[in-house]
Image (cartoon, rainbow, N blue to C red; front, side, top):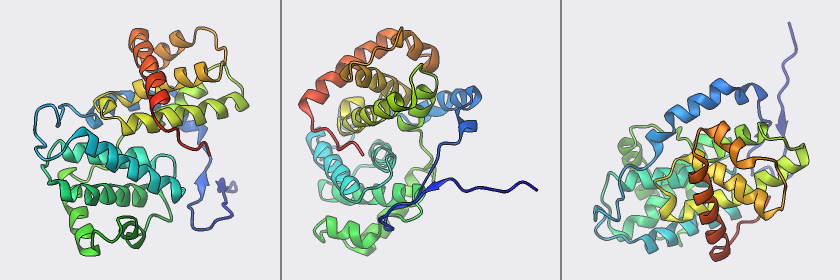
Length: 262
C-alpha cells in the first residue's frame, strides 16, 4: 500500500490555519468546465439597491461594512478566500432579506463567521468578532443571525468566488512559477477591491478573475503573448468584456486602498 502524504504548510503562528498545496488533479479541464457551469447561481440576479429592495441601506453603507470585514480578515490573517466568500454571503442574503441599518454590521460579522468556519481548520471565534464590533453585538445575536443566514442561503455555502478560477487561469498561462506567484498576489488584490465595490457584485467570478489577471500583468509590465486571447480561451468570456473590466480594475486600483500582498 502506497504511503499517504499530507502536503500542508505549517505556520509559525499556530493561531492561523494550515494551508494545503494546490492539488494538480483539480486543475483539469473538466473541473474548470464544472466551475464555469455553476458560477452563475452564486451571482446576484438583481440590484438590491437599485430596485429599492433594501430601503434603509445605501451602497456607501455596504462599502463601510465590507471594508471593515476586510480589515478584520487582514488583521487576523485569514485564508485568502474567507473575505470574498463572506462578501458573497452578504450580497446573496441582502438580495433576499430586508434588514435595518443597525443590523448591517451584525450581518457582516455573521458572514465572516460562516466563511471562516467553512474554510479554515482554526476559524474566527465569536469572541473575536464581537470584540471587533466594539461589543455592539452579543453572542446570542450572532448565533441567531447565523441560523437566519443559513436558512436564507439554504445552507448552500460552497459558493464560487474569483479565487476559484485563479489557479486554473495561471496553470494555463505560459508563465514560470515566480511569475505565477506575482500574478496571483496582484490579481488577488484586484479581487479584494472588486469585492468592496458593489458595481462588481453582479459580475461572474470568472470575469473578475480573468480581468484581474490581465490588470495584474499590465501593472507588473509582464509581457504575455496574446494574453486576452488566452484568457478568452480559458474562461470562454469575450475579450471585449475582459478588456472593459480590465480598465475598471485600473480605475478602482487608483481610487482604492490596495491590500497587503502576503
